Each structure stands twice: as structure tokens, then as C-alpha cells.
Amino acid sequence: MSATAHDDHHHGPTFAEIWLLQSTDHKMIGKQYMFIGMFMGLIGAYFAYAFRMQLAFPGVNVPGFGTVSPLEYNALVTNHGTIMIFWVAMPVLIAAFGNFLIPLMIGCDDMVFPRLNRLSVQIFLASAIVLIASFFVHNGGFGGAWTAYPPLSAKAEYNLTPLGSTLWLLAVVLEFAAFLIGGINFITTAMNARAPGMKALDVPMVVWMICIASLLFMASVGPLVAGAVMLLFDQVLGTGFFDPDKGGGPVLWQHLFWFFGHPEVYVVLLPACGITAEIITVFSRKKLFAYKTILYTVIGTGVLSFFVWAHHQFISGIDPRMANVFTITTVLISIPIAEMMFLFIATLYGGSIRFTTPMLWALSFIAEFLIGGVTGIFLGSSGADIYFHDTYFVLAHFHYTFFPIAIIGTFAALTFWFPKMFGRMMNDTLGKIHFWGTIIPFNFIFIPLFYLGAAGQHRRIYNFNHYPQLATPDLQALRVLATVSLLVMLSFQAVFIYNMLYSMFRGKKAPNNPWNANTLEWSCPSPPPHGNFGDELPNCYRGPYEYSVPGRDEDFWPQNLPN
Image (cartoon, rainbow, N blue to C red; front, side, top):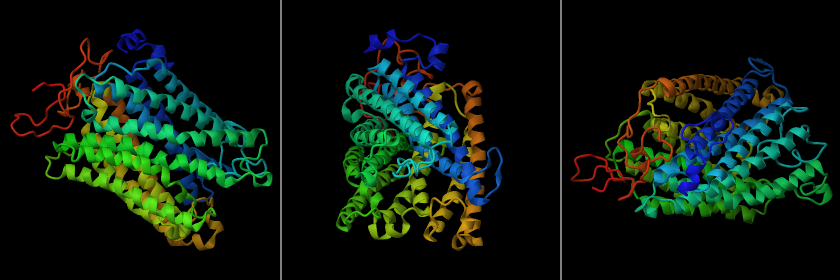
């Protein structure tokens, strides 16, 4: 593996390796995934700004966008969700940090399939280009919601953006292909390239989480890819897989989509949980509480995630007896996730906690995600979901699960591993300003939406002035509050962008192990050179979380030190 990996590298990244995605170095590929994902995140945030302005101030000329038409509104909402889930959460949390961290944390010099790794990021970039291109074709981007339910996504008389929807579908399929390739690399590398002495239970939790997430993705995505091909045939060839007039079934797409869609929640959740586990142990100087229990919990969660998909279809006409089954499985899957959160809290108990910027993000992940979990219990009950389905209550719940995963998890990881990625320290004061400027407005955006949803506000209405019962001053005031809070939150992202770019080039040089952490990536230089560890790969002598061990002068015990 070492010879193959090294033969494909130069000792200094060339223009082609950086900008034409020709590098096979896992660290460069991880950064490429991260920057592509962050660029797509800016597009997704811009879309959110545009449609929230329409909701708060109907018909306003949105600065930087113009007047939002109904067709544009649907496209903005659809592609905001699509981008943030498939082009931000997955590439950054899984592909970017998986690529960068796995070889470093298990003590090897690269992925076992470096050329395959390069192919994955190239396909991912192609998928992003295709998605962006879909916004500029006739009638603009696809507007049938990120779930792409037929008949809006299939039948010609309902699909107002036929070329845009086909490009959207092609982009999603390309993105899935990229992650299938990447997942194979992650799992194979973690299984076969660990440092001498590193047993399975010595592997850091974030590596376990990324590998299990990759397995879940590979096991669940097949039916959706098949469904996407059938939907493409319906769009382009006029077949009727999902057309009831031709003997097809639109609900079939819902089954195929959500059989993937709910494991997908855990595909992106698990890496965020692993990132949180790494950070809270370092900054509480405590051993991870119940490492094996967390690991078994994650495996159980992965299995259960394949038995909950139909709670998205409680009002789709499924047999009520079947709805009861999926209510039970939905409640059951909340148990291991809640257990994991409380094990993280137990890790913190009695620790010597330092409130660094990464630690603030990790703590906020636990707090905000618990709100998402608690509000999900209402939606997992078939009786309550009949009322709440497709209201802003669902939207608020969803953002209290996915914002901690995609945004908080990313900021936690980036602020924690930034010294290792770029060899320089981020400004902690600016980091904390950005943290509070993000977390406080986030809650002011989505807590009002719970109230709006409980009041009956449907999630896909373009102009609430057309519905007098929902256009009351008190409800409209909450929409304005949510939109103004979004503007505040987006403005604070400029602080992060400045801090990141300035620190990359002018920040204080980082030592090899600025946090006094145990895992192997901190034993190599910052940033890691070609081959990561030089001529000799490290040995592993213990688990990754031996902090505050009695009898030791130092409160950390790196995995590569024999004693």
C-alpha cells in the first residue's frame, strides 16, 4: 500500500493536484471535498436568504436576487434542502474529514486505493457542476421538493422544470456514486492499514463512526438509485413506474426514497457524534465513558435505521396497523441515540473542562440535537403526525437535527483539527464571537417555527397573504423574527470566513499537539508531510482516550508512546 500511494504523489502539491483534482494524497483530497462542500454551503445559505425574505416580506425585491416568483420559490426551497444534505453534510462530515483523518488516526500513510480516492472527488465535483447548471436551464432549477415526489417530479403536465429536474436527478446519482467509491476506501483502509498494535477497540470513535456510516450508506442507497433510474425513465422516456394512469404507483417512490432517506440521517449523524466524542474527551481530560457501549449502540442504531422509514408516510394511505409498527420502531430508535448523548454527558461529568471554541461547538451539538430528538417523538407518533405532517413543526424539528449535524459538527471538527490541517492556529476570540453569533440566532430562527407549525402553517406556501387565517399579525411577526435572525446568523459567517482565511496564511504556527491529545494524528508534524509519519509508521500501545491516568505526571497518554 505504501509504495502504491507514494508513487502517485509529488512532494509538493502542483497546480494540477490542487485545482484540477489530480492529487492522490488523502489530505489534499479531504481539503478539496471540504472547500467544494463549503462553496456549495454558501449557495445553499443564499437560497435560504432569498426564500425567507419572500416569506417575511411577500413580494419584496430581495437585495441580490430580485423578486421571487412562485416557480423560483419552489426551486430555492428544493435546492436549499438538496444542497445542505447531499452537498454539504455528506461531503464535509464524511468525505472531507474521513479522508483527512482516517489514515492519520490509524497510523498509515494514505488510503489503500489512492487513485480510487481521486476518482471519488472528481465525480463529486462533476455532480456539483451538474447541479449548479440545473439552475440556468429553461424555467430554472427543479422545484418538486428535495424528496422529489412524483407526480411533480415525473409527469410532463406537472413538472414545470423538466430539464432542471433531470439535471438535478443526474447530479444526485453522480454524488451517490462518489460516496460509494469513497466509502469502500474508508472501510478497507480502516480494516487493513491500522498501525502495528492497534486493535479494533483502540480505533478512535470518529473512525468507527465514519466507517459505520459508510456501511449504512452502501446498504441503503441501492433502492434509491434504482428508483432514480425509474424516475429518469418516467421523465425522459415517458414510462409509468410512478404514474397511476399507466399502472404505476407514486407511493412506491416514497418507499424507495425513505428506505434510503432515514438511514441517511444516521449516515451524517454518526460522524458528527464521533467528532463530538473526540473533542469532549480532549477538553474535559476524561476517558470516553463506556466506549464499548457507545460502539454497540451505534451498530444497533444502524440496524434499527432500516425499520423506521414509513413514519414519513403516515398520511400516505398506509394501513394503520403498519403505522403502529413504525411508531414503535421510531420510538425504539430514539433510545440508543438518547443513550449516546447521555454517555457524552457522563464523559463530561467531573472533568476538567476547558471552554475552547471546539468544545463550545461540541457542547452545543449535544444540546441542540437533543431538542431535535425530543420534538421528533411527536412526529414519530402516527396520531400526532396526522396534524403536524408537512407543517413548519416538521421543518423546525428537521433543522434541530440537521443543523447540529451539518453545521455545528463541521465547525466543531474544523476548529479542532484546523491546526493539523493547515499548521496554524485559529483565533480563539474570533472563534467564540462566531460561535455565539451563530448559535443564538439559530434558536431564534427555528423555535418560532415550532409555534407556527402548531398553529397549522403548511411548509410549502409561497405567500401567506393568500391565506387570511395564517396571515394574522402575530404569525407574520414570527416569520419576520425568523428571517431577521437568519440575516444575523448569516452575517456572522463573515467572521468565520475571515478567521479561517487569515489563520490559514497568517495565524500563529501550530505545534504538533496543541491540545495535548492522545490520538495518532497529533504525533505527526502540523501540517502532516508527504507520507504523514515519515520513514517509520507509529506503533499503537493503548486506546485513544487515556486521560488523567493515576500515577502519570501528564494528564494525557498518546497512543504511540510505549510508557
